[in-house]
Image 1: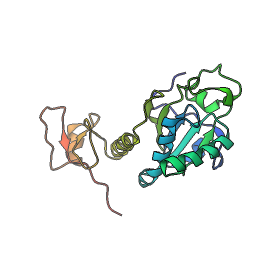
Image 2: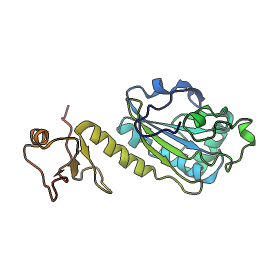
Image 3: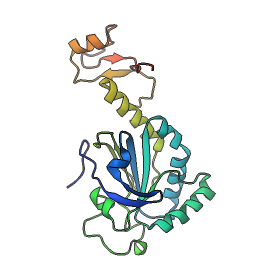
Image 4: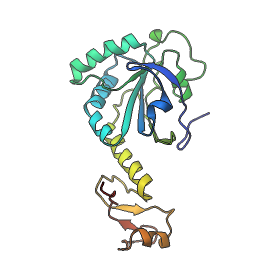
Length: 223
């Protein structure tokens, strides 16, 4: 069955570069990003893993855990980490799943159910559908799915932007406009009636059209 937004993220137990973990337990009360790679020692993915390591602090500030995945075995992950550090300046500082039996790749519809055999004999082209990003909320529901082709590096700054929007929307029942960035105006969500909106926004809102109720970005209470 194909996964969709708001589906429960499939749970699994796997070996990673930071030991065995059960996915839902590892997420806990946090948000999480699972991002997958078709093959170790590939150029585009090398840049991606290094970049994610460099901006991990931004995910930490948002209460978001990062976990990577490749079908290569653990020892290959550790060898690849050395190349990533040498060429990108950052060694992965988050767990990398060794999905050698393709369990996670199949659970998340990144490889066909019939795939089997030694992962080290498969090429990046064989695994080219394993180029996905899943953002998962504390409720273990899938909030975002992004799928990239092999030849295009992913934009993880955009993932951070989307997480800012998702987290703000979850806290305040708002929606964010095109190209929105943190600190900019937002829309009151369509699920909020005008009556309820007046209680939340007694100062009112701008409305160039009745369905476009614009307010400043809501602020979280301090302390």
